Image 1 (tube, rainbow, N blue to C red):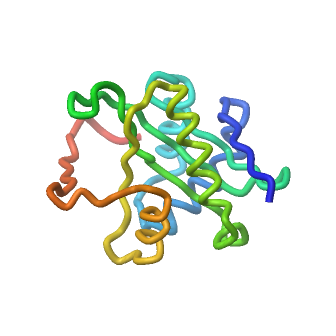
Image 2: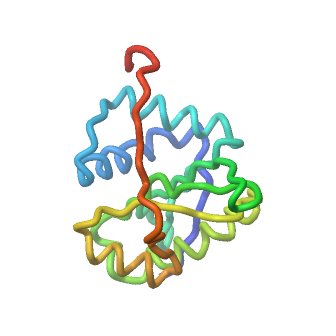
Length: 155
């Protein structure tokens, strides 16, 4: 299968949003259409934050991948999280995901990113194996912890 990544622009938000919605449903993430669209638009309009790429497989949109950039003393510069990665079911298990991760590594290098991180559900054994095969390693010494900050009313 011929895989291509295309960095999303504001003109493609309507193409992207159904995939974001499907990913949020799959991961059981609570968000509204307004919140998803707002977050997608902010990331696209601020490339210094990272980016969103539409995944094309043989000229058909197969999903998307988003990376969000940060800065790390430990990694000596920019790092990023693979914030969201979604492939439609018909494209899973065919090597598409592996090719996407290879391509996003190149995109990350172009953005001067020194390390990529991601989260995977502890119960998702297949995804853990997939990411390990792609070169991601669990950092057994560390546990990712998060604290949501109340920055005002959500949209």
